[in-house]
Image (cartoon, rainbow, N blue to C red; front, top):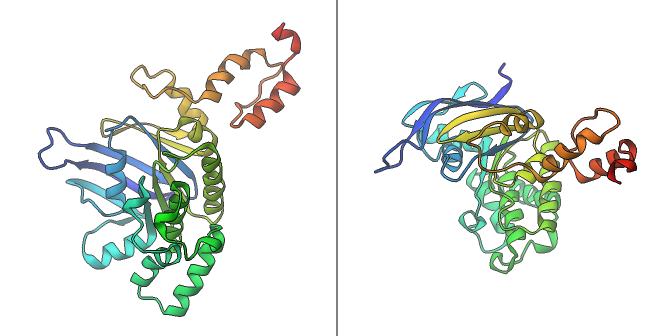
Length: 284
């Protein structure tokens, strides 16, 4: 049995009238039950990869596998595929289709042909899981952007996918909304769902991800555990997204430590290190 849930093998894809392929031999394996971040500059092919992973675009050539089963494009196979793979778009307005929160969460469940009683039970559970009970009958147009993003994630998670893809989930969110999203994503991961997030927010990636995929011009240029990948990226001259703020701070502080410790992934961890291992005389 494969250690990867999703695999791309030599995937090529070109949009009509494009002068060059958007994906050019993209190959990677997505580890099961990990929180994975996909990073790269605008135009590197992240969103296209997501559309192919959800079966919304058909690659020109190459193979996509889910738990060793190849993606095919007949109607029945696509329906089964999308029951296992959920996609949350960057803009929730592209995803929300019903007049109220509860109705939107029920939409995908109804399309599965489930009995009304089962749909109702799953909607109630999802509302509770995402702390949306008080908003159940609220019109979607009355919600804040953060609330709309939560509803769009809840609607996908009501279907209990094995793999959840999120395209720029922190875009346009304030720090409080981003922290709330972290809590929700952690809860989803605890259910055993494999998560893949495309984002430019490297501070978010550094704190959240177990595994990182790095794309450049339609290809994979780096992959691995979070600290390992950022160590690689600092020596790649063409990587222009920068580095996480905490990583940059730590790179200056690490030589002052009285003993070698793992790089901190949160401000709380950094504060503990400073109190335990850094002599105040170093700052005088």
